[in-house]
Amino acid sequence: MTDGARLPLVLLHGWGFDASTWEPMRARLDGWEIHAADAGYFGRAVVPERPAAYVAVGHSLGAMRCLDEGGGCRGLVLINGFARFSAADDFPAGVPARVLDRMLARLAADPAAVVSEFRRRCGADDPMAAGSPDGPALVGGLRDLREGDARPAWRGRRVPARILAGEADPVVTPALTVSSFGEEVAWCAGGGHLLPLTHPEWCAGQIRAFVRELAASPGRA
Image (tube, rainbow, N blue to C red):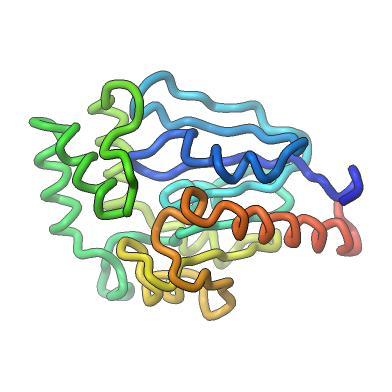
């Protein structure tokens, strides 16, 4: 890949995880300019300065947050993501709000237990990230899952996007993926909810291919 094709990457992780989610995938993108955000669920929050032009890569809740990226964003890679997470009358594929309400109610009393349970459901090997869980940050993120709706932003986007999803994702089901983004999805056979951790080479290959396509597109800034 030529230097001209290597737009920098800005990485946004999902709820209950931290920037270490990206480490296996980053190791397969050696030499690439990468800026990883951290939501501060287990320590200090990190909000990296955005390059003048970049590709936003989001996992799970981070994918929904990518849809709010500003004018420097030239493309989106959304992994195990969604435009809306909670169910609604016009979005029956979402997760029932009562499930998220129960998690919110339990977070105040025992954030570690709630996060550990969620991470196990996602398929994480470790039940907790390094550091102590930050209750307010976790509540804020969970409320975004409960209340957030980026479907208008998805429909109104002005940049290309690549959707990566796991055929066996227990959290963001195929129906939820398709309801969010339509049928144009790159499916990872046997993949679950943690594709950057479990299938890092596949994710890295998808990112490389997407960025090459952007570089070859007329009018790329």
